[in-house]
Image (cartoon, rainbow, N blue to C red; front, top):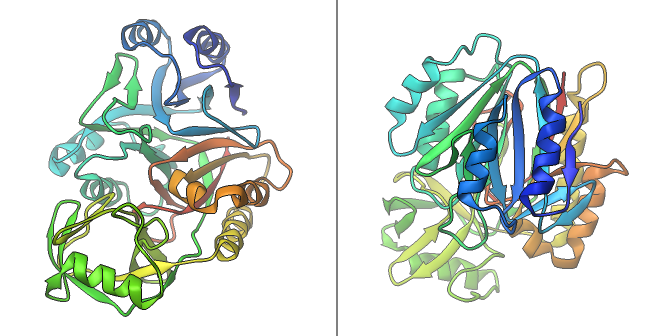
Length: 358
């Protein structure tokens, strides 16, 4: 089992990979593309509509192709064994659960789950999937889209689909390592008022004022109305904090990538490059410690905002995750991952390494 890869962004290059995938004994195929590709919507739908395998596809800000960052290109993985693909509506967890129940999921050992990274309702959808499938399934997925929001990012055999998440249930098994390295630099702050992705109150104070005070107390400063260096974290039992990216600080509000519930306690987080690099090594160690017998396909799911924060040091993170292997994967708008040892969450600024076993 291996990725078919190209760093060309045209549909002709994708055609070549899909033709190779069609010859594989697989019910479904995973397609990861770069958001910068020149993929016309109608032409893509025409090609995928005649592809003999079910397609589970997503676009991302960048790909990792054989250990290198790529702004264009595609990765195609024929998913050996049994698999089923479905679109799940965002904003309607009950309907999403019904669609999951309609899949033949008894053989499922791995759930590949992709969501539009800038959409509302991601956390509720991820929770619904976990409640239905449970911890016996390994999870690997991400928030899809380009850095500039608005364009559709998920697709199947009928082409692009909006307002939905995309799931593939596979009989493949996986060992998954997840770590981020961010550390709390504030006391816990209660979310006393929230509206979707906007936190309006922290400890009964306007959220923007409370957040700015915590950042200033650590000696930090805002950048362009938000701050990449100071995300929020939510404590989890027996695991690292869940990181939630802050994408804006408005009058009276802190805007996050995905929603946080009223009543949750959050910390303002910060980290050095060294701490993040240690965490990347820990993610790799976790994945390989849980590895089964036989060969495995390593897949990187790493956050684009993490890469942006690390800057030139991101090459060192890739080296730690790959350890000399020609890994493939994506730089994403959030990560969805669990090896079955904790609850499933939509994560930000987190390094994930999955090992897929046939």
